[in-house]
Amino acid sequence: MSLPRLSKNGFTLVELAIVLVIVGILVAMGAAMIGPLSNMARIRETKDTLEADSQAITSWASANNRLPDTTSGAASPTFFNNVAKTPNDAWGRPVVYLYDATNLAPGVATKDTICGRRTTFLNISTHNPDAYIQNAAYAVASSGINMAFGSTLTGGSSGIITDTNVSAATTIHQDRAANDILRWVTLDELRSKAGCQGAPLKIVNNELPFGSLPNPYPDTVIAADGGTGSANYTWCIQNSTGTAPAGLNFRQNTNTGAPMTIFSQNCSGFTPWGAATQIVVNGQPTVGGSNLFTVFVQDSNSNTASKPFVLTINPN
Image: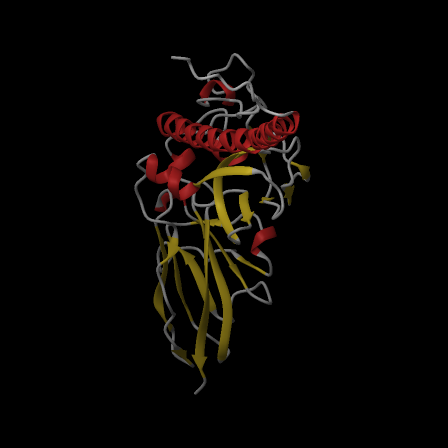
């Protein structure tokens, strides 16, 4: 009984060439996917890094009544790199830190450094979605897959974002086409994490009573509430003439106190504002008509509230 003869047929050169071409295509496709997949992983890692950094900053600020800074030096416990969870992004570039230095990172901090603030110098304009965020306490950022930021700063510094201790009104403009990665925390979020109590500063009155000639104007209180304490309020009243309505007095705290010199045509440039827990309006009006003015009040941390009023004196 004879055994069957084994076939000596194998792959032809054409078949081998086709297999090699297919393998080459698959290898090329795999190599092409490595770059985008690596960038996607780094983007996710950087987003996680910025989130962890923001949590570390907020936690540290809540315990220390101030934000970390970028000016105290690498050995200082207040230095940003010593507070951040990870000071570099997934590409090994330093995380950029922008913060309100004037109000939230002073040399000497008190409980009111954060809890006494209602506004900051830092705002953020974003795209996708479009939004304008006011009163940011700080932001941390990475330029993402790009080597440079597309976002810019205006109002204070300008140009490409670098570590910035903001000391004037500044807006971060997040470029629509850029790959920047940005994480921010608003002052309200920071105040909430710090356990701040107390209501925002406001003027309590909604309107003022009418007066009539020739009767005395009834004693009327203009009062504020909230902020860092009524003992520290200062006041300014703005109108077109910079003077009180004819015959009326705006007194400090009581209906018999000395008239206050607090009228101005421009309260933003007027100093000093008058100190008082409240203002009492009274007197003997001598001219009828409607008097339009805006009352401004500040607390001890220079938070400001304002409200327009019309005080009407009816003629005989």
